[in-house]
Image (cartoon, rainbow, N blue to C red; front, side, top):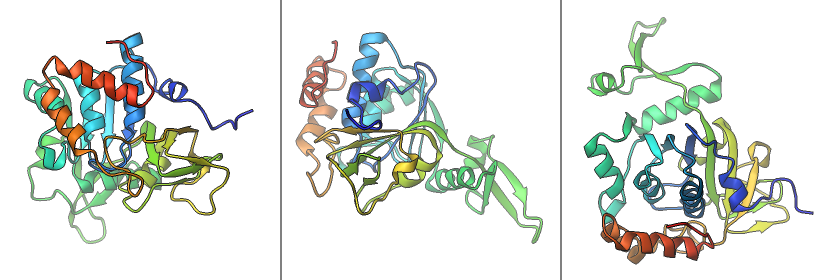
Length: 274
């Protein structure tokens, strides 16, 4: 009998609620992104027309998020960056943003960090000097200014940020959900603390870890997905597949895109309806 936290990829994507889920992805730019999970979620959507109306929360959004935007599954995005680094713009996101088909909640590194910190502190907002003197406050009317009661300084009150499900790809995880995520953490450890449900996809499941970056007490599910970040990188296991990333940017908007997504799903052992 398998441990309670070890589940299949199909079971993991079914944790995402059918409508309106606030879904967070771990990883940074084109590093350690949960690609196998993303493609399995796309396969579920093509089979069931669900989930939809997703709000994506990413410290930086990349290839994984662009695929879901292109599928029409996303209604809101909150991230301080959405792109493919040296490979250019994220094509689906750029097109959707230009048409006004997606709501963009303006974020910066500071607003995401302070918003998560507020949730961790159990308060409704976290004050900071960030954004003062900028136009960002005009773009986010929900972000208020407050006066420091001790020195009279005007501060930005960043509202608390949480999410329903966080999906984080790890290098290794054990049966209890303890996970090692490597040297570039992003905000993955914090996402694991503020999410209602935490899913770890991992290159390898081992019986027990002697140390961890994310502790199993906050993890709900563990899925073994060797190569699960491909074509993004998972250092030191494998590098970014730049050729596959270029293939993606060139295929978007063309007939070749369906075949490309199908081949990526097949590489991850996922059956997808075209």
